[in-house]
Length: 412
Ligand SMILES: *[C@@H]1O[C@H](CO)[C@@H](O)[C@H](O)[C@H]1NC(C)=O
Ligand SMILES: *[C@@H]1O[C@H](CO)[C@@H](O)[C@H](O)[C@H]1NC(C)=O
Ligand SMILES: *[C@@H]1O[C@H](CO)[C@@H](O)[C@H](O)[C@H]1NC(C)=O
Image 1 (spheres, rainbow, N blue to C red):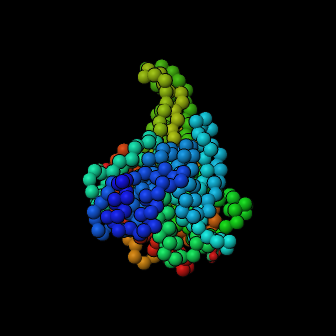
Image 2 (tube, rainbow, N blue to C red):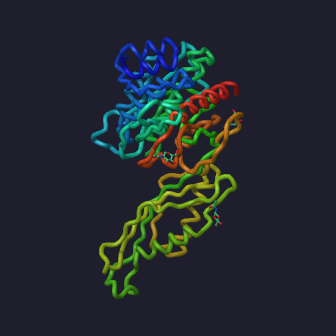
């Protein structure tokens, strides 16, 4: 007997769930999880943990989302959902990448006219870290580790189970709801941008009143997140012998003086979002210790604490440009690929603690007018690290949280 079958019996889950656990699932290589004796476990625990494990165990670093997308399509189709693959162009022309696609799904009749969208992402940051779960009896405190266990496969699994439970209980109208799981969120959001364009072009005939975005917010409802500004900087001087620095022009020195000033300057702050911060993520310059460096390059990301969403980042860019001009107008090339000001979300829902977060999401990539909710299990502070983990309780609380948000959004 498979472990999950025992777990199912012990957790006194519904008969249909038990039957599903016993029957081989056609084309759906769902993975088993350890058993538990915890009588307070929700009936969906086996389904939730198994889905979460299957998602995390399937590698899906940005660009290579094919397999996890196929898994989700089969998983949802097995449960009676209509599914669609929306192809997205290969990321960075990665030759190894198989086809990648966004997954759209709904369980509805002919009158499918979704007003509430649940969305999260299926790509993760590198490197792949295998799935692991604490040994022994599963309790609410049991810890689950692995890449994507938090960001954002925890949101994906909890959203699917939350919706499935509501539909099975007849508590919501499937015609009003849709699931969207996108690729590429961690690398600029090409998946969501593609979906957004298709909606704007009416290639996809949807007009959502609300979108519930799944990202790690510690199961608190986010009132918004900081904006971002992403730029390359090149400083050009000219080389020479290091013994005669006044005869050359050090590109590294220009860069250091400029960024010292940038780090000490108020680039824009607000009460809710705090200060705009700058990360000098990459810094390269020069060729040897005894040569005045002729060229230096920085790749930077600013986290923008001011609005508006469309142009807040350009206000920050102009302040940084002014500092480069002041140091040496002719020496700097400053190019920002994209940016946006802070992104406000609706956090006015009863029964939730609230939070403000400093990271970016796919929200600004969906260019449509709808009420936005941002919520999900797990802590961002471990999300991209080697210690990415959450507990069974985090996942189960998220199922309840998503259900409350779905019901709230449907009433608006
Ligand atoms: C924001 O920056 C100011 C200085 O410009 C500093 O005094 C303040 O502590 C900073 N606030 C936060 C939240 O870091
Ligand atoms: C967005 O929709 C709301 C409500 O439907 C409306 O009041 C508002 O003017 C719209 N905003 C834009 C920018 O279209
Ligand atoms: C698990 O994640 C929490 C944050 O939720 C973190 O504080 C803790 O250090 C992590 N533990 C391990 C063992 O990685």
